[in-house]
Figure 1: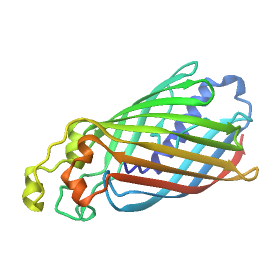
Figure 2: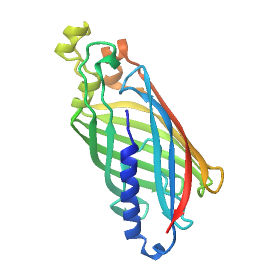
Figure 3: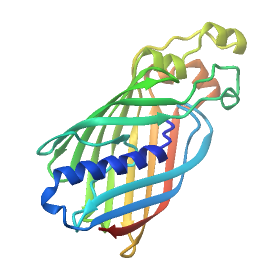
Figure 4: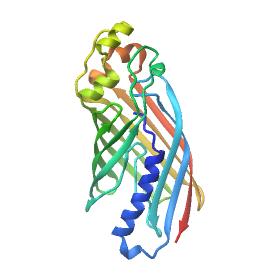
Length: 263
């Protein structure tokens, strides 16, 4: 999915700082440590696209004192915990799905506007190295559909010196989402010559994602990620995807990070 994260990351940074300050009163006098990252990433133009587009790759993290930054996988949506119970967390989440333009499809398919997706996430740490996370979001505008994901990450880290993660992903969607991106309606069938196709809800992609953040100096570091998704189920059988799209979906990004302290 095309996830434009810049504004969401800024909002995440602000809300995460507020939530942390309220929940960590004993550490309130410790200086705040901030890490910002900026780079570029290549992602599919839309779900199932055969071509890629380059967009900004942005990240922002906050902590206090020498406490390590909270782990976040590179492909998870913006969110912050409202409920914490040991290794379990629950809270709101949001994402932005980019538009699908007719010129990007290479054929007279319907356009899909930019979608704001809002919902909730739940995650659980199984020991110190394995995190499981599930998200469910509803599209506002654009595809106007329900989407979700289930992910697991194996995390290896040495504080903030380096953080490496890798794990499987499954993307889920309802009938409306599948129809929007992978279906062929009557108008589209007439205009393109493709057969009418109405996919059903279910898992539409499965894959793996990996991320790495490394501190090079006290202030500077690098961040990067790579992700592979394979369209499955009704999405993979779509005549539009078979003819004009691609089942294999790759994305990745690389950027620099800068860490500083504020009182």
